[in-house]
Image 1 (cartoon, each protein chain N blue to C red):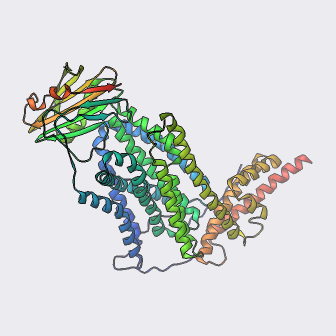
Image 2 (cartoon, rainbow over the protein chains, first blue to last red):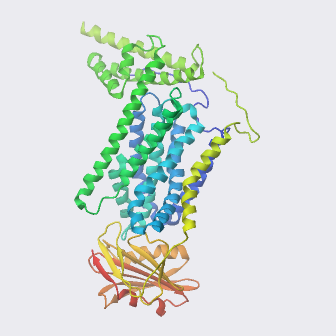
Image 3 (cartoon, rainbow over the protein chains, first blue to last red):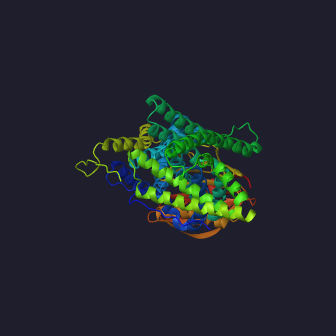
Length: 396
Length: 197
């Protein structure tokens, strides 16, 4: 059994709707345009391929849930507001996809006119895809900065929001492929849609748009949050990470040379994917380390009754938290482990709220939501001590 | 809780933030404007098909079948850039022709029905009179149907090699007769060399 905790939500906190922000209305206008454009793509064939499209939506929904789970775990010390996360995915899936389709199609024609159609078809995806798509997806993160700047506290926020923009893009792009391949298949819509959906989910799923845009988003958030660093450094990091996002995307879209045997296609594809994944996790490690330093700094003024030195060490990563819970389970049983999990969650909540108040320059007393989380922590600690005491008494 | 004062402009939006939104709007429109602008500046290209030119198509996404063919007569053009491996459209005066190749085809009759749907959906045509079709010169056989519109008529023909490869030919010309010589698939299918499965 866990401790009943209370939660105070300050009205409009975490909301995405900011009707006084001009960028918000630009976001809305782009969303409307994107919906109309995607409607144009999907609607002519909808009656014919509805079943195949819904089957593809179901498969992609599973992909989305898996990625959302992974992303929520990557976000070590904060849970981004659901409305802002949804807005990020909407930008990627609706605005960026719609505008990319327009730009990519026109750009392919330009390349074909300048070189030839075969060259454009072979090299176009590796050149045009990254340039147009990464630009438009990165602008999704920029739009979020302009609308809800307060949700960009540290560099990792950009990585998370960027990955969400990329995830939205990947899912809707998969659906456009499903629609096209349903129509192309000579025998059945379902076979065409599902073949391409499973291929894209299984082959490109782990190495695709969330990783590229995560890298670009990290750079944007670094630029806007690391204001104590030199302007040139921040700009350099932002441009460098955008270039890295372009390179990752370009590498994935790179055509396999004709001279290579067909049997090499799968190992080569996964090899490229692993390089991209490795680059992403290198960036993530850098961002996660900075996250922990932020956590320690934010919580350093808190009382020992709220957070101990051991807690600070144990909160460093998901792994160290899990280890601490396992240790607790071994020594004091499952109940203590569950309580520790609850405590860790409350400490994360507290850090987010304390950081918000510190940013606003607020002096004590604690704001109502901070006070509520501290009461939760006290209650959990009391229960945890009792659980430890009960086990100790049994052993004696 | 902290309070923040924001100043509004005449539109009721935060003052001093309009330039950010305008800059973002320019950045969002940039790729579309650049590529569409370049595309229009370069103009629409047209590929001229020489008299007796042998043309080639390959099925997609599975490159299991290929088709070599010629277009009867002279003066054919192919509008736009030819990106798709598996299909190409042609125009001769007011006659339009579309040739496509597919692989892994289970049923030629079903393929005819699937390929005629976009044609009738986009142009308000109907199709009927589905019947067997065979071409002795190429050794291919399959099905043919008539396409009828308000001021134009044509044919769709699907032929296969019995191994799973199939070629589709759609011909549409002004007029009301789907049996007109202009839209007779015979001279086209006679040149078809269909390979693969």
